[in-house]
Every structure is written in C-alpha cells, then in structure tokens.
Length: 120
Image (cartoon, rainbow, N blue to C red):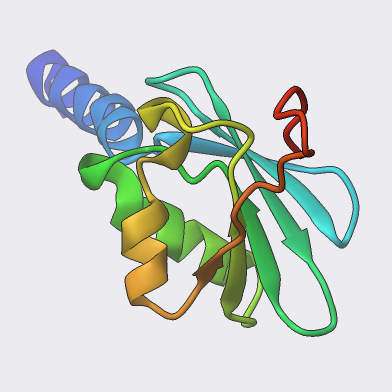
C-alpha cells in the first residue's frame, strides 16, 4: 500500500470517529441517576430513573441536539420520560421542554412560597 493510501485510511478512521462522536457525554452516577453533559454548550442534564418512568432535569440542548438527547435517553432506559424539572427558566435549561412535552412528558411547575422569596 502506498504512503498516500495509508495516510488517507488513517485520516478517514480518525475523522470518522471525530465527526460521528456524540455531542452529549453520559456519566453514570448510579443505576438510577445519570448526568448528560453537552460538549458544545457546557451545561448538564439530569436523568433519574424511577419505577414509574424517567425524570429529565433541564433538557436544554435546543433543536440541533434534541433527537440525539432522546436517543441517548432511550439507550439508557426503555422507560418513558414522564416528568421534566427545570432548575430555572433560562432557555439554556428549558430548551428541550416542548420536545419532550409533545412526547407525553409533564412539566413540573415550580412551587413558590407565600412571600415569593423561594422557589423549589
């Protein structure tokens, strides 16, 4: 094999794995808890597995990565996402809400105390 063909083959293997690698890193904390981190946007998504289904925390990656996020969640569990929780309302934490609500998840709204000083 010529040097040129070897270089082409090595380049193809290297760039293929780079191009097709996931934009979302998965860290397994336990069988029930995973942290999904967006490589391009630097924020985290929580995934909690319960007997009844999945809870997704801050599904924020926006349109470009929602299908990838959905596929990763499905690779972790065959259960459906039943609840979405947001730590706050900025779009970098709520960007995927509508996508998962359309699939049947329910957004758990925040509960505010009577003096409006604390949100849960």
